[in-house]
Length: 484
Image 1 (cartoon, rainbow, N blue to C red):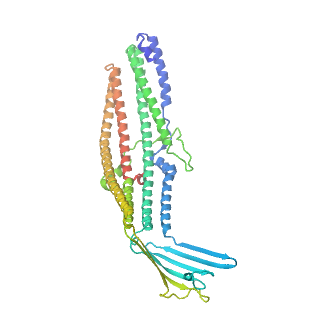
Image 2: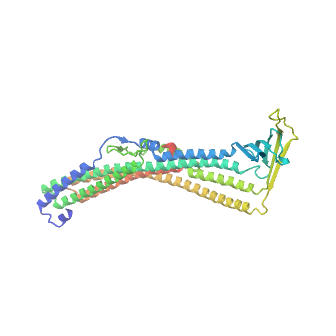
Image 3: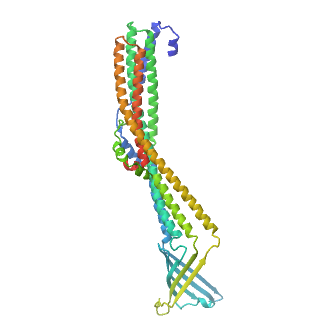
């Protein structure tokens, strides 16, 4: 339609009137469509409460806690008492060759020693002389202990400590998972806020353009304005209509993104009702938290979940290295048991110190190539992880300083935009008065409105960026779950 206008004479008043009428109808239709219905408000706090209560990732986070407890229980199982029993019996042609029964209760301890209680009974016609026992069996009670390798450290004690560290790592993974969910969900809400406020700016701009269009049309009909002015005013309305249509599209996309984080307790996705709108942008949101934290940035960097996890990884590798060094020692083990027989009158005879059994074992690889290689590999891993931890710590600290610097600059920029918007608004109003008096042109008035609209949008963007950098700062501290 606009292209047709450009190729026709501006003196064709009938055509101009038809164009004017068409623009008025289209503008009214679009304006009525673009209005965001007023209704209930979904605040950020209410929204995050729904996310934390029902989102599937929160369920996954709780599973990490349960997994950690299960791993810890598994490692503690290495210290569970163990009951063993073995029966070996042979009968052939009505002869009992042998009937051997052996049972033992082994009790591991958190120290190097293992306690044990055993019972043996052997019967039969073809037993070896070393297998002959009292009629009702033989009891034994004693201890097994490593004297060199495993005395200070061994595999099961190391695995228990590593399981405790892994449990702590999984807790940090849980915190990190929740933090990522909360920053993603909060960012989507801020975008929803931004797009909702952006629509209000575009609606206001469209209303002003429609008013100017009506004024120019009336002036044209009265012979005070040229037909080309109506064309310029119509183009301005068309631009505003396109901008508003895009703003509506962005808001709809924001609502769809927001609904990704809305779930019922039963795990059913929720949809936002049309009348639900975000709360107004609040620049005081989490401002006090930033003020309290900015004086302890180095300490906050150490509380980052990724930093804590890498620190725990260093401890885990250090335990692994200590165990590897333990394997360089000779393996010398000693077992000592007191013995007591059982006869027809008593189940257990009194224990005598001269009735005993001693066991000893020794082994030691001559070259230790496997053990020495493992020590070297573990040391390389340990050094690498320490360097990664140092680098990651510096990155987190620099991010905190950068986010805080951007935050402070945005506070100043936001304050400046308040004055800019106010001044451009005054300038536009003055220019409009001059235009009504015939002392200004439509081109200059549109230019004033464009500058006002530009700074309104920049002011809105600075508010969004300010809150977003606060969010990023809190995320790096690992305290989103605690604060939000």
